[in-house]
Structure formats: structure tokens, C-alpha cells
Length: 163
Image (cartoon, rainbow, N blue to C red; front, top):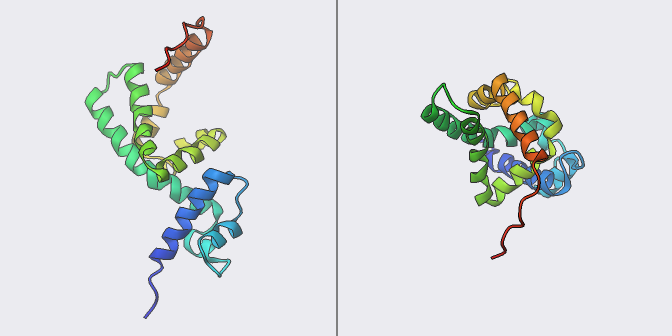
């Protein structure tokens, strides 16, 4: 009877997420992931995910499905005539939920390292339909850019009160 590889796959996924978050996506090697997961077979990562990029995609998609479902709910509530502010909320509010868990914080650290790959996230294989809808809205992106420029050019306000 063949062994159930689910536990091995999950360990590889967890260790890749941890190492990508702490050491860096581009600094972590496949060998380090395999060793951290307690695997003796150096090809275990390739067997389960195809490549180092495959495990990265599995991490991102695992979280993205949940986040995109939440974005979908937010977009359904605000409707087609959503303001830029509402679209920004639909884009960013779901990212707050992962802050509650170690795994979620690791995911957000990984996402932060991948900013130069964001244009690729418009690809249907890498993102859910709701994120693509927000990112594909040229008016939203133009308004967001204008809003950010306004924030950056605004004079500094008074310091925040310490608690």
C-alpha cells in the first residue's frame, strides 16, 4: 500500500513558507526547504511541487483563494459603481486577516518581497477573479495613483499622540 504523501507535502509547504519569509524568497534554496522539512530525498520538493517556483505558487494561491473570496464579498456589497476608496478597501482589507496567524504573517512577508512581480499577478493562473477585476480597472489605478501622490505631497501633520 503506498504511503500518504499529504504530511510530507504539508511539511514542505510550511517550511518553504517559513524560510521564504525569514531568509528571503530569492535567498532560500530547494535543498534548505527539503532539509528543514526533515526529508532525506533531495527531490521531494520537485516531486510534490515541480520546482521551487511551484512551491511558491502553492503558498500564494493557498492564501489568495481565501483573500479573493473575501474581496468578492466586498465587491458584491459595493456594486459596480464603486468609488476609488471602496475599491482600495476591497483590495487591502482582506490583507488584514492574515495578520492574526503566524502563517498569515509569513505569507504577507513573502508578498512584500514580490512587488516587482505584481504585474504577473494579473495573470489568471496566479490570482483570483476579484483581484484581477480590481487591478484591471484602469480608472481605479489612475485614481489610486493620484490619491497616493496627494498623500505623499501633503505637508506633514502633527505627531501622533503616544498612548
